[in-house]
Length: 186
Image 1 (tube, helix red, strand yellow):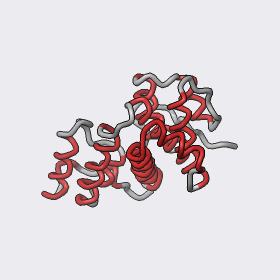
Image 2 (tube, one colour; image 1 turned 90 degrees about the vertical axis):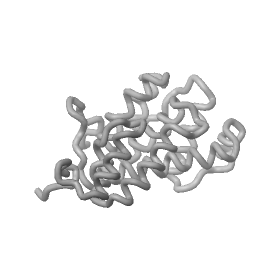
Image 3 (cartoon, helix red, strand yellow; image 1 turned 45 degrees about the vertical axis):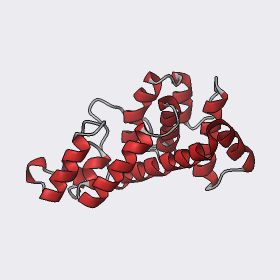
Image 4 (cartoon, one colour; image 1 turned 135 degrees about the vertical axis):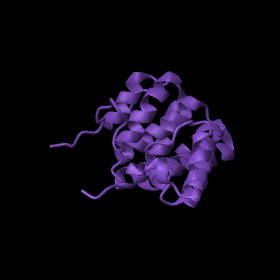
């Protein structure tokens, strides 16, 4: 198998790669792992995308729990093991029910305790599955979060689609100790 960019040698980074690496490592993530390591092959992409990622993960009007819900719907849609392994524990820590998390992983519609959770799930699921959002779902999200919230939610879904696509295209391995949340179906 060809060597994947995830195997990047940190001691041999170009100046541009080092600058991007340092920007990521010194940010709120504190670590350069998974798809972010792949992006270092294109330092300008890494620098630009990681800045968008910081906003999408930490700066939107959505609560961390709802943001993580959107991320999990995206990770499950793409069957992105690294993404799921990284974010499922965060979602639970932020207050998303473990039952909801597991239902999403299995591709089943969860039972939600809060209307906001259901609205985020429906918006994310429809956009991934249908490539658009119906008027009713759009109205529920904008009633709860405004137009700005709907735009930010769409940004989260797009950013984590990029993340998931990178993970899948470059076969980013699961974090140490993680088991495959999406084993191949026979």
